[in-house]
Length: 234
Image (cartoon, rainbow, N blue to C red; front, side, top):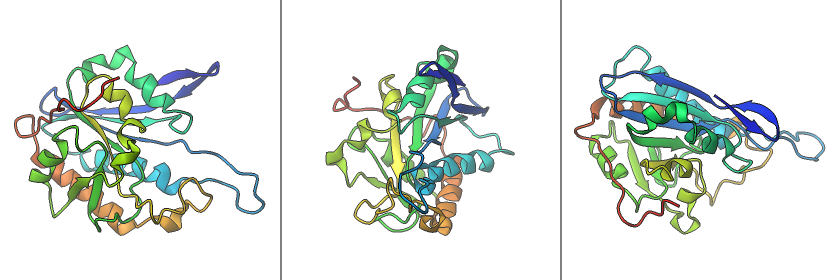
């Protein structure tokens, strides 16, 4: 899905899985990172956690359903330009060709840094802006194999309004970011050390598989999250 950046055509990537209904769930992450540094030696910012892990999660979920027909239809979006100011998510959120999907979107799950064990332990994530909707409560009621979405431990940092999900919040779509990052330990954040060695593959695989199993249990009748009056749509 093309968009313009400084006179050049660049791309987001989007795929759709049709389900039994025309109600959609969205899954997203960003595939860009911050490039290279001026250091000698290893000067490449690989971005294994930020955000190859998020892309891995949405690809894993799409793979889980490749031979299934879920209750919800699903749209998978890989954003470009997050590190430049969430440019890709803004562009695709404004793409009129996708309005039919957006107008029928029940919720968007944006995955941002899910490579490590969270401060809540394994098989657990936190949700930004948990105080603004009941998505986490409805998800946890159906969660498979102990998977749990926890409250945002960094609520004061307003991550809900600082990640790609916010461009869909502006469209009044239920959209949150989901992460496992423990910022007290994440020395690899925006560092050349954000490499494969930081990835807890066992935990990431468990989360992806349990997300898939949970999604098989939900449908438009038992999963219809709502915002409360605390959220700012601007």
